Image (cartoon, rainbow, N blue to C red; front, side, top):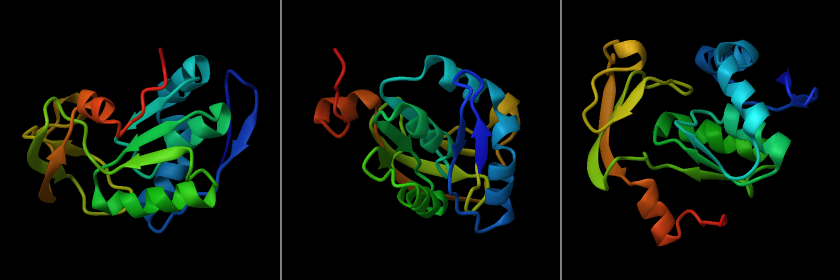
Amino acid sequence: MTHESSEKSQQITLILHTPNAVCRRRVDSFSTKELETLEWIDQYGGGAFFDVGANVGLYSLYYEKFYSDQVYAFEPSVFNLGILAKNTHVNSMSDQVNIAPTPLSSKDQLAALRLGAPDEGGAMSTFFGATFRRYGLALPEQTSYRMPGLTLDTMLASGMIPCRWP
């Protein structure tokens, strides 16, 4: 995949695994689907990046490619973790992109991760009781499993995520 940065006037190329149509669609729409996210990264990037709901890692990899800073990719879906790990590896970013297979939560708890699709690259997941997705639409839950969720404060205080800023 190749994308041209709006702020940096540079092209980046990433190698991405696309084992199915969902992942292929994510790659094909990267430059057009979430323009505001890309513009935000281009304009304000620098420092640690927290990609909450990293999916297969497109934005984590994009950020790392431009800024060479520590990236924390939070992705609790077992269906996406393998692709996320492959994508960081094949792009030689395994030391910079830290994969956190734990949902961020408002409190430390064991709760259900509800997934809208049991597919690699699938999205529309929620943790701890939410039954809606973007724009208030109902979440089409197809599977769920219980897992621990942690607050960012807990992760920072415990050293799971090192705090390297003043």
